[in-house]
Amino acid sequence: MQPTQDNIIHAGEPSRSALRVAALRAAHQLLDDPVVFEDPLALAILGADKAAKIRADPQRFNDPLLRGLRAALIVRSKVAEEELAKAVRDGVQQYVVLGAGLDTFGCRNPYSGDGLRVFEVDHPSTQRWKRAMLEDAAIAQPESMTFVGVDFERDALADRLREAGFRADQPAFFSWLGVVFYLTREAVFDTLKFVAALPPRSAIVFDFRMEPSLLDRRTRAVDEYLALHVAGQGEPWKSAFDPASLCDTLLGMGFTEARSLASDELNARYLSQRKDKLALGGAFRLMCAKV
Image 1 (tube, rainbow, N blue to C red):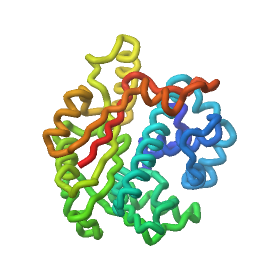
Image 2 (image 1 turned 90 degrees about the vertical axis):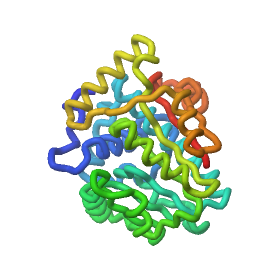
Image 3 (image 1 turned 135 degrees about the vertical axis):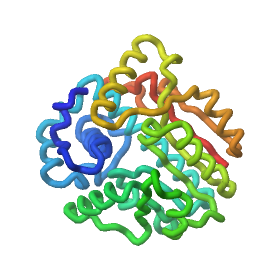
Image 4 (image 1 turned 30 degrees about the vertical axis):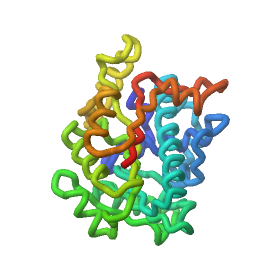
């Protein structure tokens, strides 16, 4: 992925990675057939100018590397929202989106009638930027959606959530997508311990980077290239995990279930028999854990 391909991303915006993900999610709505993850707000939230650039030339998001990244982000979102649906059927009424970026679920919440409240957690500067983008795009913030500004270098997640109305005595579902890569192992485990301490029926879905030593030579080369690229953008990856060891760690924290979903399984479930070669790479892993 060359920096010149991200020409809809401009310096000075709070999160390059958040906008990059949103652009790829929007491109998925135009490029891929069938669409795996439908998001009717994916283009609109970017604003008229950025959306027009994507509509004018969606193929620039379709080289092999960007296609693999797009597959990863749409599949992780699909899994997260499928698991959320199960949690809602199980009576869960709190959904926490950690590192929400330009995620649109809170604005299209189909479970608001079931009492689902959405807490979007992100850095305050990113949230100010997102609020401005929502306003420019005339996308309303529903009453069921609450922004929770957290500076993880200064703030405790539990405190900020509680101040926003989150009930730690009730179960909650968490999605944590595209974030763990950028955190230290200690920071990752601190957040997971918080979720593990919540009441039964609480759950979390998150993606993570595989330990490079566990990858084959070709996949490791792609992983190293991406790691160098994001580091050059000022957002270096800081953690990687052995899936089996991570499952054991989660169970030791108090989760009763921990399932690591590999790319082969996810490709078979969501991306089989396609003509457009949309597929996940071998370094991609998803974890589903339940209290």
